[in-house]
Image 1: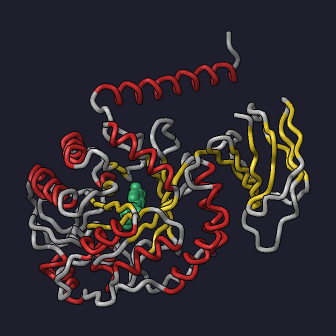
Image 2 (image 1 turned 135 degrees about the vertical axis):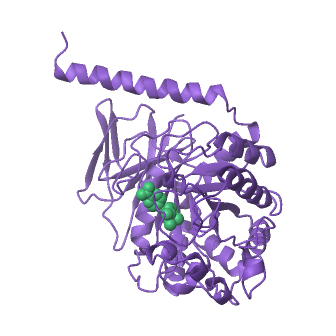
Amino acid sequence: MPNGRGRFAQFAFILTLAVFISELGSAQSSYQPSPENLQARREFQDMKFGMFIHWGVYSVLGDGEWVFHNRKLKVDEYNRLPMFFDPEKFDAHAWVSLAKSAGMKYITITSRHHDGFAMFDSKISDWNIVQRTPYKKDPLKMLADECHRQGIKLFFYYSQLDWHNPDYYPRGVTSWDNGRPDHGDWDAYLDHYMDGQLTELLTNYGPVGGIWFDGMWDKPNADWHLDKTYALIHKLQPAALIIPNHHQTPRPGEDVQTFERDLPGQNTAGFNTNYVSSQLPLESSDTLNENWGFNIGDSKYKSAAELERRLVRAAGNNSNLLMNIGPYPNGEIDPQFVSRLHEIGEWMSKYGDSIYNTRGGPIPPGDWGVTTQKENKIYVHVLNWSAPMLALAPVTRKITAAHTLPENSPVEFTQNPDGLILKLPPAKENETDRVIVLTTSM
Ligand code: JFZ
């Protein structure tokens, strides 16, 4: 009879097997990613670092993107807001150049958030930037054109949750009495309104990197017509990736597993799943200060060094990092964001080799740091270790050389079946990451 530990191991094994089979089964039952889609997934993993942008009419109030809900405003009251949204300083070239200078390879921007307000030229409803604001233009079109010019991939965040449309009914867990009628046509909301807008986004903006969905958690038990919507997206643009922020085990048709404010498998935020897909590309999103949308009272900026370490930890966990900024309502970007992004960009120009195009390395991540790998290189990222000798778990590949990045000076090492020992150079002042490049024979 197995003891307690044996029984637990047995249980854990069966559970792992069940999850594995279910992922395999569901992937096979209905969704076969197209070759373009599989290629796009690899390219997504190669990019590693993206810019998240939360920007909408809510930015005018400087109180975050949830202000409609947090202040329990009525629809008629919130309807006044677009009249004051006139981002005369919006400059698509400046935004895309900023992302590029930070070493970011993609941008994910809110095409509409939970207020349902379309930040693009939509014919499905007049609740959009062209028809309701004095600005009258489509910033997403300008951004898409500029991204194509500068070689940056553009993804659209799209909120499935809607605090404005009466057809978002029955309402979900975030509902409050905001003056909408107590009836509505849920199927029309999904099939006409949402799929209609998604069709616009995937038709009028050239090649799109993908759709980043959010808000399903508002009605966890509703029928969201996911198969239909996912099929529509993959039909319109086979390479477009579906990235759902539902914090659950991935479903068929989904192409990336994303984790909000956490590394894959961690759940410090309290709403993420511990399950990490072994098949899908991974992404972790976070905020540069403490808010997604512009919040005038938020000056808690993370330092460039802290952001660099997060990026390194994400890469070592086989994940991308999507780092958010909330631009001002006039279209300018907070200089505090800009200076940090420039600093990260400088750092990436020296250390980018150890991050771009890599996958999580062969040595498990630890408090000391992480590893990444590509081709015959293993990059050891030492983030938190002060002693001269670092002992690591064994690596099966034979290591033929070790040197520092970016100086390329040799590093002494010992490799045997019990492990790998590196003699580290002393940390330099303000060094966020000591990178040792291991060259292997295969
Ligand atoms: C969502 C949005 O609500 C938020 O405004 C932002 O856009 C972020 C990227 O995504 O955040 C969530 C999603 C789910 C939960 C909490 C915040 N949840 O389930 O508790």
